[in-house]
Length: 279
Image 1 (cartoon, one colour):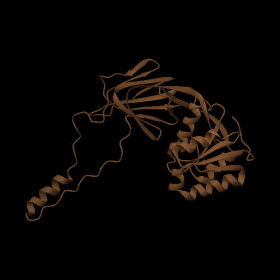
Image 2: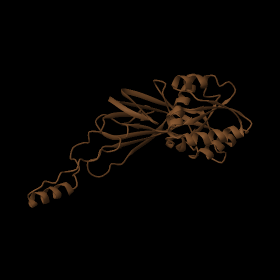
Image 3: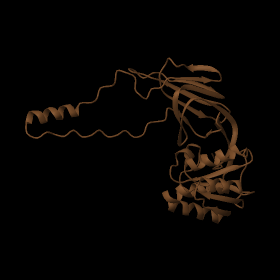
Image 4: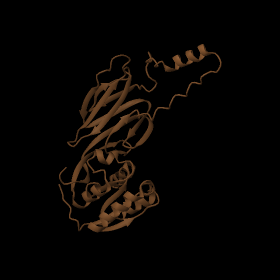
């Protein structure tokens, strides 16, 4: 585990979405980093400039100020350039901080910037799929649905009191659980290291895959349950293959697909993230 002195030269890449989302946190992070190290600031206006800045970092240590998408973008670029092994990334999360915090990065701008200056590199596993995409934190199939749409209010009819009472009664009754499989259920074959965990004849609600720290991914399959909650199926391995009819998946903060087959393999210790030294 490598530690870093505050005299390191930094390339601070500020994602445009972060500047729009929370300019105050960006300013605070810039002030802390500039006060503690020789920091060169870069303000790309889009993905192409972001990639160009990272490619021209030279000997400077890259620091991304941005959300989970910006962090994934940086790791993806370095992975495809085959430069992850020799590059320790730092991130100050601004905007959606869930991914960075799940990896151990402090959520506040000051704490995260201090970790960049005084932290230590930790090597983390990576999921790499057969299209050269990467997953840092978690993979979900199918993607988690968005917020439920609020039910349209039932108008109360004017005139007959008994009719108004009937409408109120019907509107207040809880909806019954469906007796048929949910439309979000999927029929998938999930194989871990060549062993079938669930096949196409068993509908599933969700499949989740999470990279660990020892070269093995954790897999959880939740079969569809109409009555009592079904016991999840657990497995672990270095390779996960999912086959099904046009399924989508959420990898970190992005939704991909539809695809009919995808394989993810664990790349052990493939990338380095600077975290607080006591983590």
